[in-house]
Each structure stands twice: as structure tokens, then as C-alpha cells.
Amino acid sequence: MELEQLIAKGRFNEIYKSGNLAVKVFNEGYAKADVLNEAYVAARIEEIGLNIPKVKEVREINGKLAMTMDMIEGKTLLQMMEEDPENVEQYVDMMVDIQLDMHSKRCPNLPKLKDKLMDRINNSGLDATKKYELLTILDGAPKHKKVCHGDFTPQNIIISDGVPYIIDWNHATQGNASADVARSYLWLCLYNAEIADLYLDKFCEKSQTAKRYVQQWLPVVAAARLSKHVPGEEDLLQRWIDIVQYQ
Image (cartoon, rainbow, N blue to C red; front, side, top):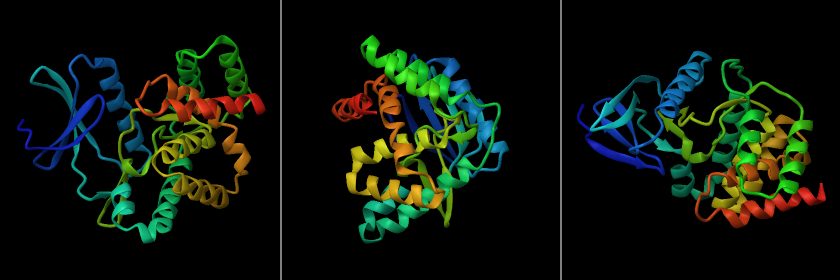
């Protein structure tokens, strides 16, 4: 298989164009179980009718694991926001509508969001008292079974001929939609706080969700994100985690 053109680069993989396929090549040493799980999750999501790049196969390329999928031509919602800032509210509306449609789906084969958050909080490096407080909040949260992306951001939505496609499903779970929204809000805060607030207002209005209900998830998802040790994020995440003291 010829890797024709590098089209994206992440922390753990590179994505290439190869004919009418996109090839995600994982870094050397990336766990085989994680690659196979990502392919499995994507296959399950495909079954419930959401627009996603369909996975074709998992293979080895030049000694590295790779996953091939449909190539979706278009622009990300993030690109559209940056190229057309005067209409950013329209794009935020679109983002919220896509997310609400996703949350309306059910996929019982996905892992549980609570289990993933619990594991990440336990590996966050926070002190035992703070972990206990956060895990208590998590344990008391309502138990839902909605499809949650886990990294639902404008850069993971591609618009192709007017049709939205959601990409990068490796963090997908079933659980409480407001936790998924809190994770999106945190990402947007790192990108643009004004857009983040617009997004949260629109989501709460369209879903008839109390803003405080979403905000209660912020310390939990921030602590879970802290376990990823992403450069440049720690200060904001620590501020959101400290909110737990005032709950």
C-alpha cells in the first residue's frame, strides 16, 4: 500500500491519503489491543447509523500497525470556523446539532463512560483526598447510556458536500451526555473561551439542560484529562479540578 500524502499528524499516529482511503499509521510501540479496540468501536458505531469513515482493515505497514478507512474529502468544522469567523455562531449551532443527534443513539457494546473516567481519575496523579471527592461525584451522577464521543471537537467533524462526518472514535463510550459536553467545553476553552461559552449556552438551550448540571461534570472530566499529560493543558485543568472544593 502506497502512502501518498500526509494529511494529519497527532500525538500517537499519522494519517495518510492512499487512493480513496485514509490510512492511520500508529507510532511504533503503540499497543495492538488499543488499535484493534479502536477498529472495533468504529465498526460498532457504523452499525447505529452515524456518518463516520468506515473501517476497512487493520494491517502492518513498515513495521507499524495501521488502520485503513474511507477517505472523507472536505473541511473540518474548525477550519470553517477559522476561515469564516463572522459566521462562527452558525458553525457552533451545527456542532451542537450533530452532537445532539449522536447522543440520541444507543450502542450497548461500547465501554461505560463511568468506568473510563474512574480509571483515569485514579491515574491522574492527584492526591487521595481530591480523588475521593471526584470519584464520589462520579458515583452519584445519573447513569445514562447515550453514545458519547469522548473527544467531540470541531477538528473531529468533517463537512463533505454538506454532510457532517464524525472522526476519531477511539475514546467512545456509553454514558451521560453532559459529561461528553463538559469534555467538549474544556477543549473549546483551550481554543477560544468566547466560543466555548457560546457552545455551552447553545447546547443547554437546545437540549433543555441546566447549565449547572453540565458544569458539575467539569472537575471530573478535567481530572480524567489530566492523566493524559498533554503539554499546555495542566493549568486550566487544575483550575477546573479545584472547583470541586466549592460544589
